[in-house]
Length: 190
View (cartoon, one colour):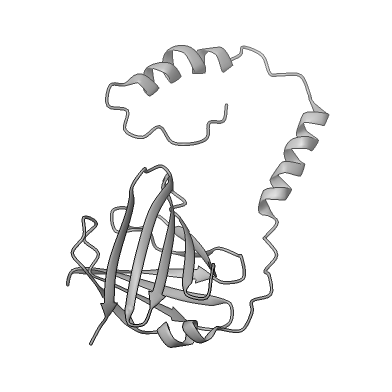
């Protein structure tokens, strides 16, 4: 038996009851299943598809705006997420680093693939130690979009950083696992 996805908190024991009362008893057998070479071959092909690494795409040279904002810290206005600062640094032609600060106490780093290949880093503060993956692309001349996936959790996010002069607007929208959508603004740290 294989299950996928997450059930979240099983506050009332519903998932446990479903598994132990209905699902597991139906998959138990007194005798082994007959050989299924076609099914095994199909399973093996699907496994190979998932373990084949993605092909990196050619990354265009850094734009003027990317070079301008790289390494600069933006102070974020008060917001419900508690984010106090954000910085985006383009380390080389294929990777960027986003630093997000929560007050004076915590900062987490998100490594970003610019070549359409996810990069892994430690997870969001509420899930320390659970890996997360991110990739990003310039959607327009001044808007950088990050796809952020908490691999060991259900949360997937789209972050859009829109830069104009010394201002930034950060739009964070949950695309799976959470329905949070918030836009917060900030200005270049003096």
